[in-house]
Amino acid sequence: MARVCSAVFAAAVVALLLPSAASSQTWPNRPVTIMMPQPAGGIADLLARGTAQALSAEFGQPFIVENRVGASGNLAAAAVAKSVPDGSAFLFATQAQVAFNKLMFASLPYDPARDFVPVIVAGKSPVVFVASMNGPASLAAMIEMARAKPGQLTIGQTGVGSMSHVAYELLQLKTGIVLNGVSYKGGAPMATDLLGDHLPLGSDLLSNFITLAKENKVRLLAVASAKRFGDAPDIPPSRKKSVSRSRRLHGLRSWRGPALRPTSCRRSTRSPTATCKAKKPGN
Picture 1 (tube, rainbow, N blue to C red):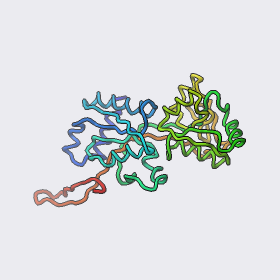
Picture 2: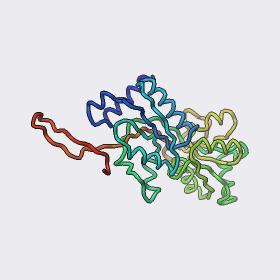
Picture 3: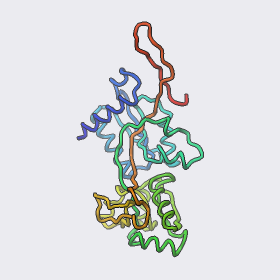
Picture 4: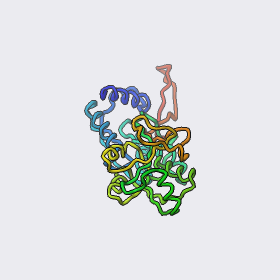
């Protein structure tokens, strides 16, 4: 399976990123950097590192995960957007970097639509509402507590523009409650505070908390979905609380490479085919 996945990944890179047949035949011919916009220790980081290890073994070149955290992933995204489009740098992206941040920030150092090429989907997970073991016992109890003390019940989320943020904002919008949102740099530091009972509530991906829930270390209150999730049928859906009536809120992980585009083409006197020169967008 790892070999099949590596082959699919390599084919996507060659088809979408590399500008010439010569470069596609030799890729990868240098270490490859995977920019991770979240801190080490979370599920996304572990997924990226596992993939990097498999690709390193398959291709004989180092695939290195670099955690560049900050500004809701904009630091990592900008670094990849400005890199040379030769298959040596990728962004392990979330929806924030490729869609939401453009709406959340007045300006970005990159254009999500122009500066990236989607390569492959790495994984997805539904969003859940989670509580510490001393926190609310259910989503209904959470809403009652929030209504009794508007703005005083704290909920953690993993950055402005993340699906974690979107989920709890929808909960406030649909129920009329007011929560005290606290932004974390990733699921791992949020989990630490939930386990230490420093944080009563969180909103994040199921993949970050399902193991802790099975060990009775945190309590999963609801999945942000109109229906129960097949891999975790014991978690109630949030449809009665109108968080998501028609579809499940997912966190999506994907590999994105820096885009290139042809800027000039000329027809060779020796060949009827046109040759194009490409450059980085914005240059």
